[in-house]
Amino acid sequence: MQPSAQQVPLASNYITDFNFLNQYLPDTYEKEFERYGNRTLSSFIRMVGAEMPSNSDRIEWAEQGRLHIKYNDCTTAAAVGGAAVDKATFTINDTFNPALAGGAQLAIRKGQTVFIQSNDATSTPDSIKGIVTKSGTADALTASQIEVAFYTAAGLVNAAAGTKYTIFIYGSEFRKGTVGMEGSLESDDIFFNNSPIIIKDKYAVSGSDMAQIGWVEVTTENGANGYLWYLKSEHETRLRFDDYLETAMIEAVPAEAGSGAATAADNPTMGNKGSEGVFYVVNNRGNVWTGGNPVDLAGWDAIIKRLDKQGAIEENVVFVNRNFGFAIDDMLAAQNSYGAGGTSYGLFDNDEEMALNLGFTGFRRGYDFYKSDWKYLNDPTMRGGLNEAAGSGAIDGLLVPAGSTSVYDQILGKNAKRPFLHVRYRASETEDRRYKTWITGSAGGAATSSLDAMEVHFLSERAVCTLGANNFFLFEQ
Image (cartoon, rainbow, N blue to C red; front, side, top):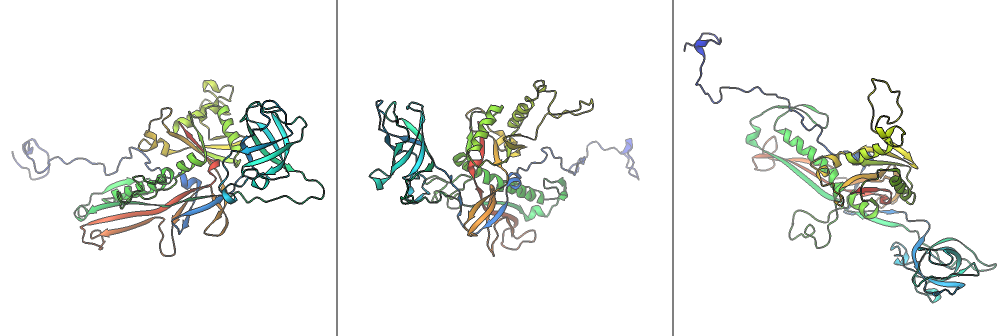
């Protein structure tokens, strides 16, 4: 071997058995490859709602009840056996609204005219009209009973004891020179509440690791690009925390009394009372479509008829997973006479260079429905990776009414316009807990403790308010 005076590769200066740590330096890409694209999930509540401050452990609001009352579970023991009667006593078995005065106030009063219909068409006639002559304990009845005198001479005949009827008020009638209506009704306001939860996260890096810098060029999910070193992991912790701020509001459930999460002795620093997330509220107070997705107009007609009975919100957004989105596209395409073969979705000029659009963004049938893919339901590390078998309870979509509604705000002390979905975070003049972040330790410029590291802390305290849950639809398997 003969060393050369210059760095020239020759057969005489080639070393075959030399190893100085690593004789072969790798060629490296300093730019990180985005193998999973945009990995963040948050945007749903940001799209359909808003964020507002609150300074209490409990958020309360009132929602309007029905203006008119219909009772669907009414029975009478009179006229059993085929004998017609000109009046009958009905027992109202419907659960009374606890928001009404006294918790059991009957909305039907003397002098009001009512429509009565058999629920199973076994009475004679199937429907009849009458006037209320007695109501409640003031007339020697029980608190849930009324006496009705019928307008027809044939009266009412029951086919069997315990026949159930539906009764609703359509007016009133009084004789000349009589006193006014007895009693009055209170507004049927229904009060709801929710509690904020504290969400935390943390990133830590030791001072020694901070002393050796390795640069990585990145393009981040929030649109930034450039070079990062150890703070890349801190940055991803922040993105992950941002997602948890939303998914916690979607999935949160209240802790039941006696549950492990609510037992402070077992969990002195974690868990507490939970909160009512969007899925929990809609599942309990809203509308739930089960047994597969609505894939034809008959299914959507059933949904529309249900919405007719609720707030009848004109515009709605359906956030769907991929399978549900395809099912809606196929349903709409089938309405075209050429759509069965998949060749004509919509209206085209049939240009040979045209890219065929096989998807739809929405449709109108009674109401406007806009379709939007929800990444949270598709992501394999979240709900997208769950079992989709029938009966699994997997969620395929959520119908959210667009716009805002008027509610009584306990803090403002007046009615206020609020989005159907919005987040309330804890805040005051001196403490804002919407999105807190701070650094502790003794590295990276921090000087708060003897810990030889830098710790980046994240915290938020928030709750989601789902107003008018009766206007939402949850699509479950």
